[in-house]
Length: 139
Image 1 (cartoon, rainbow, N blue to C red):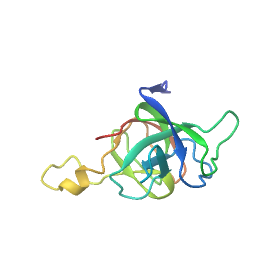
Image 2: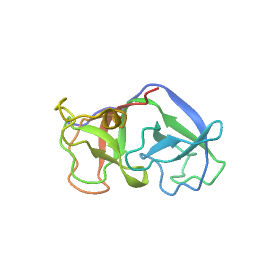
Image 3: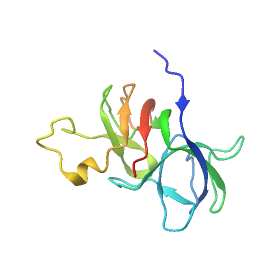
């Protein structure tokens, strides 16, 4: 079943670094005001998923405007196999991964809980698969 994208809040930020092929990938908050960086594995600074760099572009240069969906149903890039309804966290290079044992509350630490960014609505079978997910930046 195909899901319709339902982005909620979207904001424009500035790329704090060169971001190759960043559309449908996760970004984190940088240290400067209004700055985003490519998502890194296990980060708790999730800002959202890149929806638009500029019409016709999939990469951003440092300082470019980048539209980021902070919450909603949006396509994301998987880092490997992910089951439907799996809890998601950041992986390397702006990709997402499943969080093993997240739903077993006896095994979830506060650090692991802070990495949670959403749920997979579709299955991924390989690195680079594009799937639909429900995501949300947390404060």
